[in-house]
Length: 559
Image 1 (cartoon, rainbow, N blue to C red):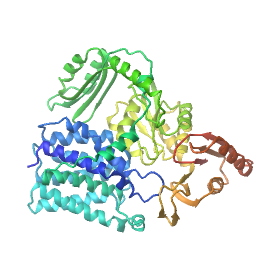
Image 2 (image 1 turned 30 degrees about the vertical axis):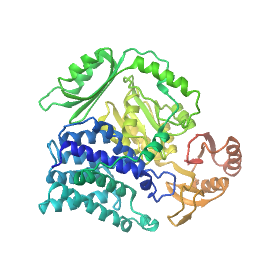
Image 3 (image 1 turned 180 degrees about the vertical axis):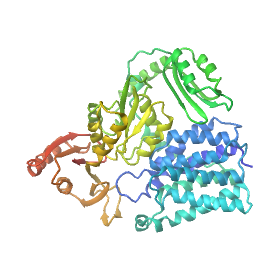
Image 4 (image 1 turned 60 degrees about the horizontal axis):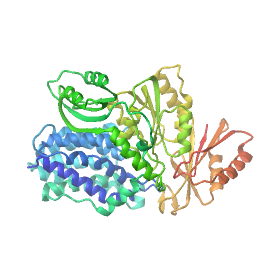
């Protein structure tokens, strides 16, 4: 019998198993650009639920599955993380409100998870995590039909997942050429194996302390924004909780929001079919709790004294100033804001220069991230909620962030429009196309059309040896990318820039923009600018920008 506690332990075991093998999954990425983050994204997504699950004891299986799904939704990072969260959202629906998990629950859970994941992907690609999950579901259905118990059904689902994973190279030529299986599919198998360890043997796989310590070191920041901010704290207590909505409650969440605004500020009330997530700054947290109880039962209550927090943060910030920063490019601390204008903007980017550029173009909130550091749905959601506008346009500026951004739409208190910008130049072009005198819908169309007119080129380095897309690439070599694909490989940075620009310009092109990164010196940038001016200056208007971005030496734009 699989109780709620057993299911809880199984998901924690899955998170640990994936975390322990995160780097191995990252290394399966065949694309040699330094963005091998499938394992990291999936691990951080699943790991986001561990803290919430550890608080549960004696809960039903349905409750555990629902809490897990909600946490994964908010913690989803990258396409692989979003798909994983969708699989678990369907999983929760399959378990429903069951006290314990049955064989039928598992059969339904796999089926509904696969259905949700396939629906969310515009053009599903076989040979990926989608295929692995689908075949796992098919095996689970056959196993249930043959009369097997819940553990056997789950075990058979893993057998199907492994069989599908082994076949992924036959479905995707790039995998076969590299001699690897799909990274997302491997991550999903690791998740299932971590769960089975508890279901079958009662053993929770423990987190590898060495891996965890390394992750903690990578995530550590010597900057404490809260301590550096010298602002007036109007209300003392930051109060957060989740309301499990009562089935017989006919009241609307807007009523709760209206009440909270009378006793505090920074009110955020986000609801879906089953829960209401609440955040408020108030001097009377008890009143907030009493009112919320009329909507249902409360879980995950957190009340913090912000004045005390600020003093401690200020002390930590003063100490941090004595130490060198390990990573200056961190996601900001977001504070919920009331809508004060019709339209606002959120943009994802990495690099102080790019952040400043987007701010100059009218972006309200910057989410730090991009290649190798995909922000989560919750990161983007918090940025949206801190934008003082009724409608918020979101610019992901990376193909691997679009899905995470779209997951924020149904759980935001604002009207959210995600423009499918896949590159930084597309994000810049979208902002330039915005017209404050037309409707949101017209702007969305105009911004989307504007990015189609932009050609993006990028110069980066190979993170590993690879035989990809007809190129034999050695680690450290320069890769010139055009439209997201490798165009050529070289070892000379200046020649690569000029060669790529020559391929990008067209007879009707007018503008060339060159954004140089953190690994390019001002002198190098000036030298390449002089050569670009000499070669292209007579026909095109050329702009050089110090973006400060990591990973990419140069980001080129032609329109």
